[in-house]
Image (cartoon, rainbow over all chains, first blue to last red; front, side, top):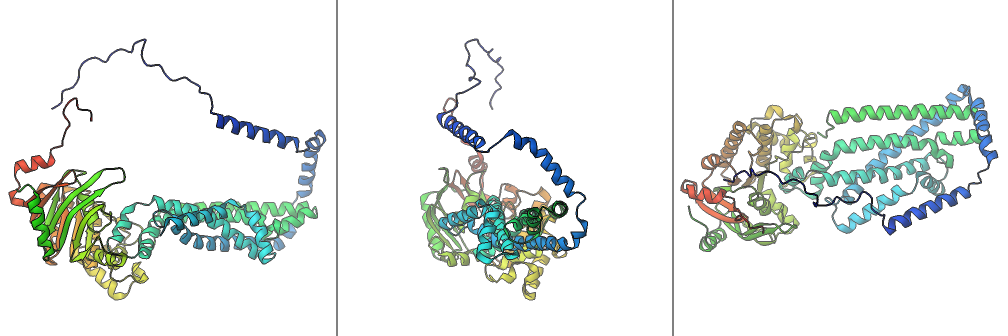
Length: 282
Length: 274
C-alpha cells in the first residue's frame, strides 16, 4: 500500500520559474495579412466616391422613400398574394428536392460511410462548390439555362439547400455513435441496409432540424430571387422599385417580413416538438 | 488451472481444424496509436461449448470478440468460424459468416429512433436483405410474426410498438438478444452483456441468454467481469492479460493464484520512470 506524503510543500522561492511574458510579437504571416487587409480597406474607401453632399442628402432621400411608402398599397395585396404564394411554393419544392438529393451526397461525403476516399473528396468538393457560389449567382445561371420564372428559382433553392444541408448531414453522420452501425454490420446486413436502418434513423432528429432550418432560409432567399428574374415576389419588388411605386414596394417588404417571421416561428416550433418528442423513423 | 503454453495452443488449433466452431491461430491486433491489443492469441471452441472470457479492462476481450467477425480488422493471424476462413473471406462471404454469428454488445447498440419490433427485424437483414425488412411497418407478415415470437421468448412482446429508447437497460439488452434469435445464428458472441446493468437485471439477462444458448444448442463466447456469473454460465474459462492468453481451462479449476495473476496490475518498480 502506498503511504501519503505528509511533508510540507516547499515555499515558492524568489529564483523560481518565470511566468511567460504578457505579450508576444505577432509572426510575419499575421503582420503581412493585417497589412494587406488594411491596405485593401483604405483602397476600397478611396474608390467609394464618398462626398459630403451624398451623405447629407441620404436622410432626405430615405425620408422620401418612407413617406411615399406609407400608407402601403393594401389594394394590391390580392395580386401580390399570388406572387407570395409562388415564393413560398418555390421554397417548399426547392428545399424538399434539395434535402432529398443532399442525403445520398452526404452519405458519399461522410468519411465513415463513403465507399472510397476519392468519392469522399469528390462529394465534399461538389458540396463546397454548391455552397460557395451565392444563390443570386446560381439564379442568374439558371435563368440563362431554363429561362425566366419559378423553375429557375426552384433549381437555385435546390442547389443552395444541397450545399448547405449536405455539409451538415455529412458532419452529423461522421459524429454518429458507431454502436448501432456495428450492431447492424454484425448481423451480415449489406452496406445499404446499414445506412437505411442504422445511419439514417440515428441521425434523423438532426436531419429534421437542419431541413427545417433550410426551409426557413429558403423562404428568406426565395423572396429576393425574383430580382434576377427567377420568379416569386422578388419580380414584383424589382418592378415596384423601378417604377418608383414605393407604396407597393413597402407592401411587398411588409409581406416578406410577415412570411419570413411566420416561417421562422413555425419552423422553430416544429423543430422543438420533433426534437423534444424524439423524431422517429418507426 | 493450466497456464497456457505453446503446446496447448497448437493442440486446440488442430481440434478446430477437425470440426470445432471457432478456431483462432496467432491472432494479433495493433491499434493505429501503437497499442498492441491482441498478441498471438490461439483459441479453439467446440460446437455447443460455452466459453467465458475473463480479464481486466483493456486486456483485449472486446477487441478479440470484434476481431472474430472482423468488425475490427486483425493485423495478423487466422480465424475460422463454422468452417469458413474469416480472414480470406470477401465482402459477400464475410456477410454470410456474420449472419451466422449473433453479437450482444456491452453498450447494447439498439437503434433508438425505431420501434422495438424494427430492431428485432433487423436481425434478419443478413439472410433477407430486402428493403422491406428495414422497418417493421414495411416487413412481410411472416417476418413480423417471427420477430414477435422472438420478442415473446424474451418476454417483451407487449413492448413491440414502443421506441427502443423508451425501455430500461435490462429490457433493451433483452431486445438485443431477441435480435440475435431473429438472426438464427449458430454462434453467440457476448461482450460484457451485463456491464451496463444493475446486478438483478444483469442476472435476468444472463439467465435469459443462457436459456436460449442451451435450448438452441448455440456456441457461446461471453466476456464477463463477474466471477460468480462466470461460474454459473460457462463450461470453460479463457483469461486474457495485456492482449495475451493467460489461462485456459475448466471453471472449477480456477484457483486463487490464477485470479491473483489475472487481476494483478503489473506495476513498475519505484523509481522506474519508463
